[in-house]
Length: 264
Image (cartoon, rainbow, N blue to C red; front, side, top):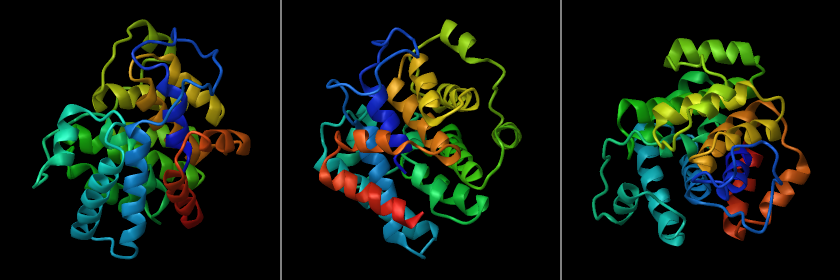
C-alpha cells in the first residue's frame, strides 16, 4: 500500500506549479517529503486494520476519527487544510460538508482490505463521511477505492474505465494534453478525480502514472497520491522505488504501511 505515499512524496516538491508541467524529472531528491496525504493514508489504514472483522459503520467511523486525530496530533505540521486542522483540534469533531480531495487521497487501504466491491465502497464511504460528507467528497473516496479493488482483481483498464463512468459519472473525455492546457490549481474531488483517473488510464506503469499526475501541475502531491494509489492496484511497484521512498518516512509511518501490506 505504498502507492499513495510514494506518489505524495514524489509530487511534494512540485505543488503550486513548481515543476514546469513535464514528465521529465528526477523521481526523488533531497527536497521531497511526505505530507498530510501520507499521514492520513497511514491513519486510515491503521484504523481499518484495528477494526478487524468489525466492519460496521459505527466501529469504522469511530476508529477512523480516533486514528486521524491521533496521527494528526503526532504530525501537526504536515500541511493540513484549515477546516481539517480545526476538525483535528475540535472537542467534538463533526463532518463539515467538504468536497475536497482529502477524502480520496487517504482512502487507499479500503481498496486493499475487503473481498467485495460492495464492501470496499461502503467502507470508503464511511472513511469520507466523518469529514467530507458532501456527495462529491464521498464519491471521490468511493471511486478511488473501487479502482484499486478492480485493478487488484485483474480487471482490464477498459473494464475499470467503463465501471467508473457508469457508477460515478466522471467526464473522462479530456486527455492529459488537454488537461495540462486548461490547467488550474483546484483541490476539489470534482477536479482532482478526472485528472488522477486520466493519469492512470493513460499510464503504462506505476512510475508513468505518477509522472502523468505530476505533469498536470497544481496540487501535485495529492494528484500523484490518488493516481499512485490507483496504479498500485494494477501495476507492481518496483522494489527499488519502495525502498527509496521508505527513506523519507519516519519509523512509525513505515511500520504501519508494512503491516498493511502483510494484511492485503
